[in-house]
Image (cartoon, rainbow, N blue to C red; front, side, top):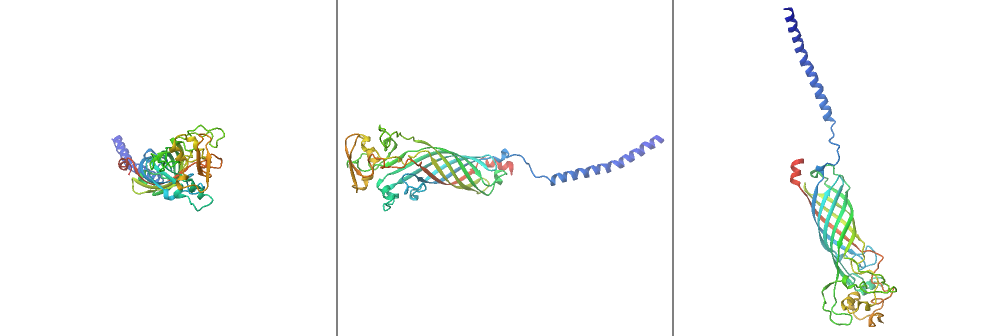
Length: 355
């Protein structure tokens, strides 16, 4: 009987202690969890996969040319009236809080004209360019890849990206070009040209003697045909603005530094017009001053190549080291000003997963 009372008393004491101990443990656990929650600052992991995204863009571009047929000899000279439109299609992949890589295809046209741009009243440079009377157009097909650096970081998903950010970019581009010019009504002898008024390709004509066999003493000795495929370095700055959760609008200005001086088919000196043989079209496209009228300061010479006599404006259309058709010391440049609308890909899937 005594043993039974001891068992009952022990169970009573144990049942009285357990609720108190359990309550103490619960209070400690709650305090620990509250402390953990109050000190939580989110993940400190690297830029996650869910924060990398792709976008496609369509751009409307304005393109300007800087080269030998600019109004003035300065590198920054261009004729705004010859601004031509272009279109671009791009694909962008975002790698990190500031970094993206953009690939883009662009189609655009460059244009220049001495007669329309040069100041004939400028006795220093304008009159020379006006009397040279060269012109061209060039349709550019460009494929570029540029690395983009944003000024403002985006540490979140695309939905919470920054409202706007300035950016800079640098990359490489490959392009195909084909300078052309409109053929005059007649050749240098006054005979009608079959191609009169047509846009003709200038590269095959070798307007600076590229297709001729020049001697070592000729001013353009060693000249070779230039390639239709060229490389350029695109670089520039811009700003991107968030329109909504899936669309951005960006505006940027960029220069393409090329490694050719023949976007306009003009680079070196005039050559003896006899180097063109029987190709009257090539001769007429090489020397175009006669289209302005009879020479005001005529020079007549007998070609050392074919023995024929040519009368040209002094300083143009003849073989002499000072008879410069262009300046080979500078490479041609074109500028592209763009307005681009971009749409983030896979937005519906990401929105459902991460909002």
